[in-house]
Length: 279
Image (cartoon, rainbow, N blue to C red; front, side, top):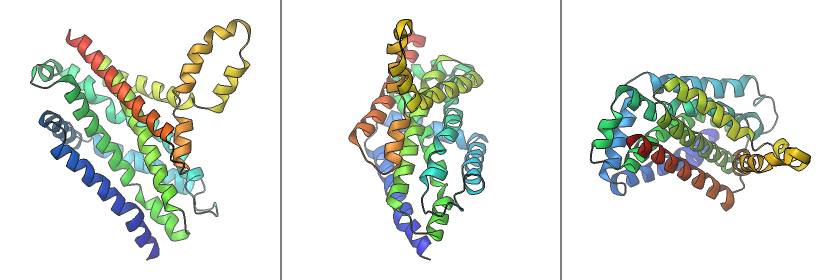
């Protein structure tokens, strides 16, 4: 009973509050054009098997692997970072591009992109509407991961604030991967190409934050120094250090600014690609 109460107060209520805030923003703040695109895109996910398949795959991979292979039940500690959250971005490297691969490639394949852009809708409104719809799908996946939270509360007395921070950090990483996929999806009409290239880009974005990359930068000598600016940029764009800090409950303004700036830049890059295609 205590585990259920903890789950209700620490996760269910905050999740409902966040969802209510999002709905309020969607209904009263965002332009009508954004709302129209958002509803159209969100319904397209659930009128086809795409969303349902991705939900099953994500929940099956994340919860099953955590319960049976990462030792979450045998660790002896009421903590989810090591057995769950440190692996979650690896699943999102595949899932987020799978959710976002159709954002623009499907419009190009069907020939409806020109029709969409000739409507009284600004490119940024279409981009934001589509992006928010895909973000809601990812949000739903993370919300449905509650069984593992209930289990850890049932078995022990975890710091639910840190666990919530882990989910927030994971969602921000998912949004970054989705933003990257949006750019790549705008470049091609093939969903499969968008998926494969996005997975590779997200993998590089995740791995570039490894400490080994920083060590490599410090060890460069001679002619290899010519690659230092590129490697340094890649290292700066790595999301792993920012995710790790937030997932451990360290709420740093620097990390929040990184995620917001990165997502905004990718959405801006998407608009540039669309404008070039439009021209």
